[in-house]
Image 1 (cartoon, rainbow, N blue to C red):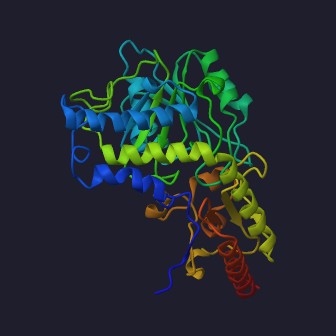
Image 2: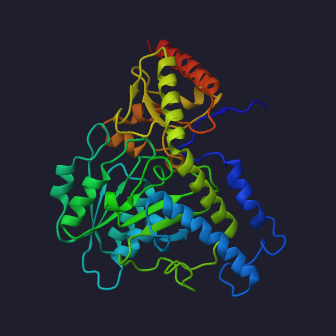
Image 3: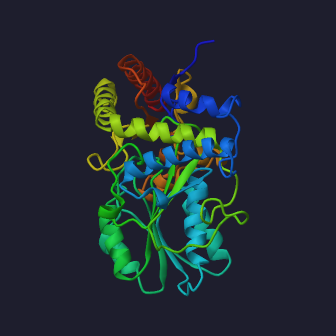
Length: 380
């Protein structure tokens, strides 16, 4: 069986061999390094704890934060839930409003809607046609009743990079907490949490060539949020035994990302330009063409309003987020940009990165061009 070309890096990335090697001593279960609980007061525990702290240091260094500000989670979804629910239920919190953007990931939007259902207020600010927030619109939506503002650094569907520093300034001007979903930006673009004004930030390992099932929440010192998971309080408010192997893999993936960030970005830019140059049919890039992560391309094709994925069996791609694919609904991100439902469903999200080859990009351009041409001919 011939495997399709994998161009769905926005959904998840391949595991880097170095990250797999970092996990091996903790996942195999052998010797002192194999199975200790990192919270146990003996040699097995101390050994596992050392691996956890090495990973914590690597993640903190990548975002310019102190290691003690990093708390491990099961992924970016848990981090977003903790940030929003924790901010609204923190001791002494009297503010009840959440402000976010229409193009946020479902882990933010659905958490915010849940909080709205139990008494919070929610303001969802539209974006411009290029997917970027209008800072004026956002500022006008804010007030002293806002507890938290949430915005995604790099959009998971269209790759645009929001002006987080400007959004954070507006949030802080009314005394609100700034939360950032950095699942798609962490390890790909330079992040300095102090320079950007970030108070809470979610990250995940499997978007940077690390394992699935582990992520982290950055919490600015003295930013108070209530625990999401109650219990032993292992991660200063996030209870549960830590998965040493997964954390070691995330730490190594973060270390590699820091070393290869410039090279990875240059490779992605080259592949982006090559794919677009290889298309011999009209196309539209959804989302701003300049303020974006180049490893994400979201394309629609004039004259094509039927889903293309079924006509591209040689490619592993999507028309939106992996979460949205479960529902069968058109992408809320694309409809927020003004695309109609049919065009949104016919759009393609292509994600590529460290292990994508030029030969794969060339083959993808050929297959997409042929599929689009066939659909346009049939519609004529």
